[in-house]
Image 1 (cartoon, rainbow, N blue to C red):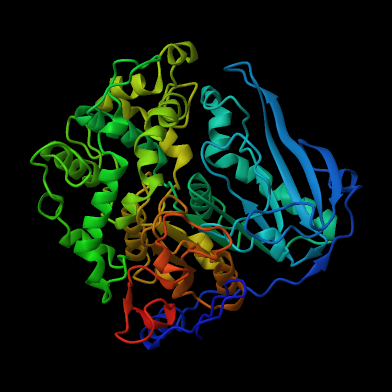
Image 2 (image 1 turned 60 degrees about the vertical axis):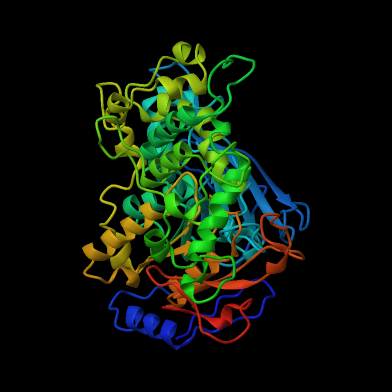
Length: 577
């Protein structure tokens, strides 16, 4: 029952005995129903789909056949011939802000269909229709759902620019949180039926970041509508994480060594100067020096997340500055600040806001600091002000300030409570519409035989991998230690938010999920590759000597450990245990 993941033209590998034993113990005795394989089909209609796929509150604006090769996809083969349908659902005018809203979408239906449907859940705060290709996970994937033959839908989740002002409308909030998925799913399946003569045999939903949150929320709310759920770096507690971002700004501002010279924020602390790129690199290298060999081999990658948290001490393991900051040391104030940041945000009153962040060499990745600085002062203030706080801030008041000023002035004690608040106009709190209800009760999904696969970069700078691990541990406990029968978590050492960082971040989680759903091949490990020289899209943060080394991503809580012999560059030399 070995799971043999495929990775483009890469050689397959088979798990070692210990990993195989885990797989057999996890799935061999399961009494859950087994879902069968999807059947292929052929596109029967395109130009006339608008007339054939009539659905309530839905308008199709176009349906055109796209020739094979016309749609280029970075790092992967061009898309096959397919029908591109564009449209919208639920056009309305808000009674609260007077703006016009709709759920915009595009759907791409390949001529050679594999019998499956994929809902592409997008990231950020949505608001635009990302090309519907269906990414498979990680960085620069070699394939995607569309080229595999899936019918793929993508949407703007019920609002259009300028964002984040849609947060003034209660229904737009709900659409963003969960309701757009609920509305689009039956419409998309009806469109598939009109195009191919039958509904999809198997349905999947997946995405990363906010898209991963969409997938986890769908697992809790729409477990009867999908067979497979792929959640990457899921912001399952996004309102808390966004408030924690503002808290980080306050921490970094207190140790910033420079002020902003000009513009609306002139004279305020330049948070980017709190810890420079060279100092983040230093921190990453010292974490690697302390933790690298804990998995059995010194290779620049830290596989054993838990052991590293116990071993690394920023006070003892990072040189202290005796003079000026030059990138080779940290001041005591910097160490104390980083220790607080990694321990997790708290209110001035001492209430925990969000999860701690793990020490990992990937903190040296450029994407890590991006979330702590630019995103925390440019995106998160607006998201908190309009989407996550109830009631939302007046638009004119927000436009009169800046993101940095908003973060520095934010009242954390009162603001944190507003993510749980409601009013007569805003009857759902952001906590209610953004997070999975009863996140450890996935009984509808489980009893159907559906599966959930979650992956998360250990060096994610915005959504903590520790948060995902804690959720999975609680899910396992709530299911009598048998959560692995229907849900598995894979941590990606060194990977930043969704991709990047010094990591083996190229992998195909979607194929692993399909194999599990349709063939019962529960994935105990997934093959991942570094994108060094020669990769389809090179990751500049991968050391050249890594090349395109491979590693197994192991089902949590197992860790990839070197077997003691074999090529350290090859995943076959590692076991999950």
